[in-house]
Length: 229
Image (cartoon, rainbow, N blue to C red; front, side, top):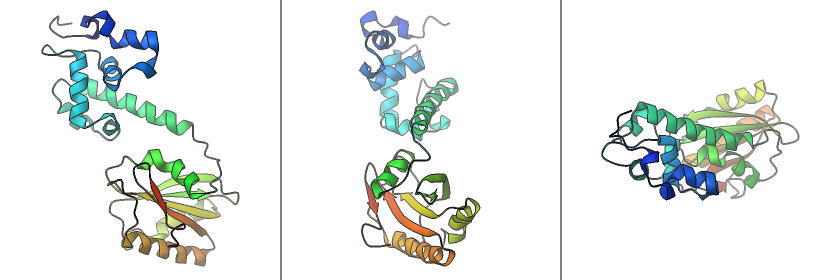
């Protein structure tokens, strides 16, 4: 390896993130230190810790790594395709570890239960996603489906797409969600129109729409609780 490349081992031992992790545990490391461990090497101009710090600044925080693309990461000087792939693989493992903790047979008994179920899936997304949970007669989740991606309006979110999956899965009821990338979950006029249309179709098919929940950043609004269902 080129001696001009600054590696983690070139950092003084008391500052090495890998040694800090071994000695104190991963929870004791900063975001920069964890990124430095993943990146392993800096460049001939800067240490791996400086590269990790600059990367976090460029993507505007560790949370934004969830939605970053390889192309976007490679625009950061010092990050090539190999490092970008390593970063995204690490982020995806973290995301999957959260999802594995989720019991897909857990009963949804309140708007908070529903919001908690999808919050980490939806709150960081940069586009609106319309998602349906299909429930059995015990209100347990039997399937999750992304129905539509894009701005929500009544002409685009077709009830047939929502209820087709319900019929296929023999679902007793449906719980719908969509996110607001702004982080503000206040329902719009379009949100209310879509909800009323789905409620009407559900009544005809005998499959209840039990709620439509708008997801913000760690916040949510239940249209049922607001009397808009």
